[in-house]
Length: 145
Image (tube, rainbow, N blue to C red; front, side, top):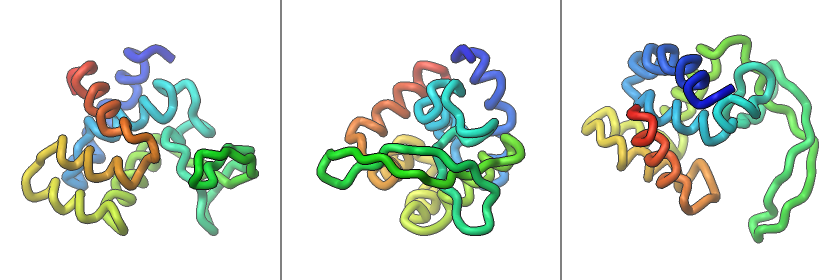
């Protein structure tokens, strides 16, 4: 899938669902692009974010690399969410943003719609890459999201 094909595939769905939650579609679109290499490295048809399954989820079992916290990688077998639709995957991302450690940044976004503050806030929790927020914002700007 090319970047343009990815954007055509995800944008309308992301906008529609993120509007229901008052969350930034631009962020979910950019994160999906980064996490899935523009839709070319999805798990199943719709898991763009590498979200692991919890008991009761439909899942796909795959080997994956984990970091021990010291930069050392090791391989495990893990269950990843297997979404039935793109809507389900984006809705799950929105729901993730509305609870736990992300809730503070979702609440902030509901109040001020400061996309940059939201991206910087969630990225410190979402990824170990210290440049993750910058990558998301560059993708948003580069794609005019």
